[in-house]
Length: 217
Image 1 (cartoon, rainbow, N blue to C red):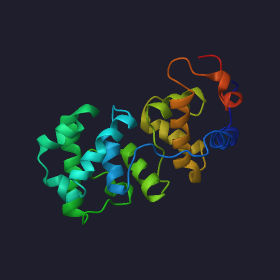
Image 2 (image 1 turned 120 degrees about the vertical axis):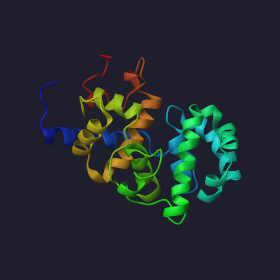
Image 3 (image 1 turned 30 degrees about the horizontal axis):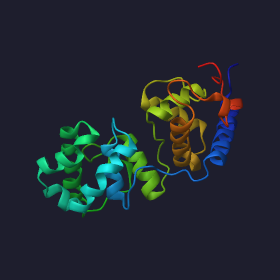
Image 4 (image 1 turned 135 degrees about the horizontal axis):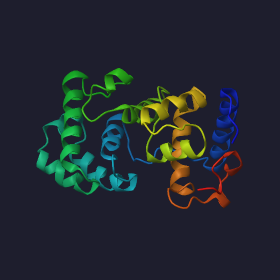
């Protein structure tokens, strides 16, 4: 593809978002949750795990420990046993209990709705903070970059970077701010349903005409 101007890339990105939204009109975060706290915990648990796998353990976790205080005071061994199947259960238990403890002691048991405050919580980096801000609070403060978004951003020619922070910066420049959260969900859905890591289904891709990698991967 010839070198693309910033304006052309933004125009193409807008069309990608529009077409993907037509393809997935019911797009949403696929981590089951009923509150910002539940979403925060589920997102921390989703590292190196599937959303389906996380959704299998969180009902029991939240049934037994419905508030940050409850989770903070729980037996670590009990928490580990509940979340074991999500992998890395030792470090994840430390993170979710640490986050719950900080919420209980410093934030009156409520999940903060700003990036700087969220980043003070154990186990929370920009990806998790962006998920919580965008999905739970409707705030477009950044762009979620997971494995799917990283893969698709490169294939779509929206970023040539490999570092998630730099990919996020490129996507924030290419995609209109109002669409950051929506676009993140759309790219994740498309990565799970069509633009697979191995053998992407270009023949049935709704944005193949906008993709410089179509039929070339």
